[in-house]
Amino acid sequence: EERSSLLEEKNELIEERNVEIQQKAEALELSTRYKSEFLANMSHELRTPLNSILLLSRLMAENEAMDPEHQEYAGVIQSSGQGLLSLIDEILDLSKIEAGKMELDRANIKIDEVIQNMRSLFNPVAKEKNLNFVVEKSVETPEIFNTDKMRLEQIIKNLLSNAIKFTTEGSVTLNIDKNEKLNALIFKVTDTGLGIAPEKQGMVFEAFQQADGSTRRKFGGTGLGLSISRELAKLLGGYIDLKSKEGKGSIFTLTLPVDKNKGFDGVVDPWEK
Ligand code: ADP
Image 1 (cartoon, protein in one colour):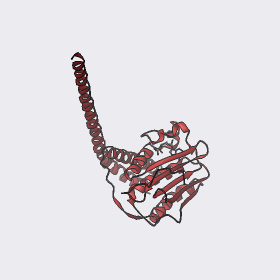
Image 2 (image 1 turned 90 degrees about the vertical axis):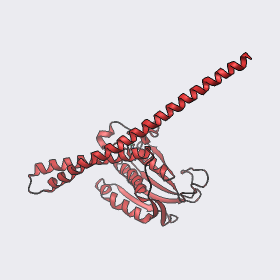
Image 3 (image 1 turned 180 degrees about the vertical axis):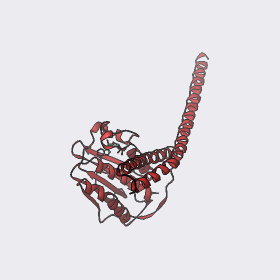
Image 4 (image 1 turned 30 degrees about the vertical axis):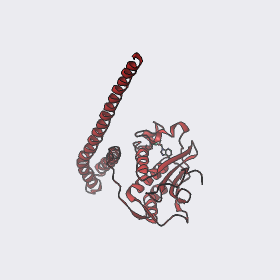
C-alpha cells in the first residue's frame, strides 16, 4: 500500500519534470527562432544603405578628376564596404539555415560549367600568389549532376578561397571524382599550405572560429565560411570532411549523393576508395 503510493508520487514528480523540460525546450526553440528572424531582418536593413556606400565609393574611386589621394581613400571605403557586405551575406545565410528557411534551387547542372567558373574565378588570385592551381575531373565523373548550383559553388568557393588564402607556396587542387561504391560525387580541395593542428580540426567548422586567433588579422576572414559550407553540404544531402597536417597542408572533401532521393549506398567513408 505504502510502496505503491510512494511510487505514484515518484511518477508524478517525473511527470512534472518532463513537463518542465518540455516547456524549456519550447522556449529555447522560440528564442532561437526570434534570434534568426532578428538577424535576417537586420541583415536586410543593413544591405540597403551599404549598397549606396558601395556604389558611390566606387564612382569616386574611378573618378579621374579627383585627386589621387582621395581616389585611394574611396577605394579603401569600397573594399571595406565589400568586406562588410560579405559578412552580412554570411550572417544572413547562417540565420536562414538555422531558422530552417534556406531553400534549395535544384536543377540538372553541368559539372564542366562549375569547373570553368572555378577556373576563371581563382586563376587570377592563384597566379598572383604564384601557386599552381589545378582543377580536374576523373573520367568517371558524370556530365550532369542534380543539385543547387549556386550553393554547390558557394561551398567550393569557400574551400578554394581558404586553400589559396592559407597557402604561401606549392599548389591548390580541386579534384572531382565519382565514388561508385557510395554512389557519390566527391569534390576534393587539396592545398600545400599551413595545415591545421589536430586539436583545432573540429572547431574550424564552428561559427566565428579560426584555427589561430592571430591569423585573423593577417588573413582577414570571419570564421563563418566553413560553418556555412558544412550546413549547406548537409542540406544538399552530404557532408564535408577534413584531413590536415600542420605545416604540410589540408584536404577538404565535399561528398554529395548522386541520387538525392536514395542518398549514399552503404557506409560512408570518403577516405576509403
Ligand atoms: P575564415 O576563412 O573566414 O576565417 P572559415 O570558416 O572559412 O573562416 O575558416 C575557419 C578557419 O579554419 C580559418 O580561419 C583557418 O584558421 C582554418 N582554415 C580553413 N581552411 C584552411 C586551410 N585550407 N588551411 C589552413 N587553415 C584553414
